Length: 101
Image (spheres, helix red, strand yellow):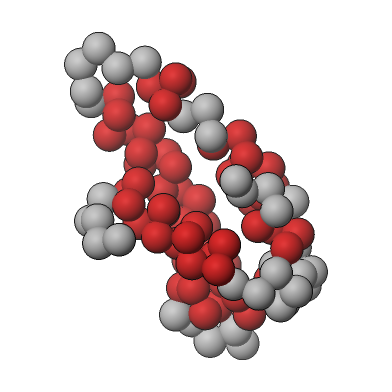
C-alpha cells in the first residue's frame, strides 16, 4: 500500500513484518524491513526508534482533526507498546510480532 503518512508507513512496516519468517532472528528481520545492514546496530536501533515514533506522529495528526476522540482511535497502540517494550533483537522475530494483531 502506497500511503505517504505516518499511519500508512507504520501499516506497511507491520504488514511486511507479519509476512516475515517468525523463526528468523529479530535483528535480521528488522534490518531487512528497514533496509539496514544488521551489523550496523546503531543505525538499526535508531530506525527502529523512528518506527515506534510513528505512533506519536499518528496521535498528533489525529488531534488536529475536529471532534475526534484520539484515545478511541489509538487503542491498538497498547499492543505495539507491548511488542516494543519486550523487543529483544537476539530473540526470534516471533517474540516481537506475536504481540501485533
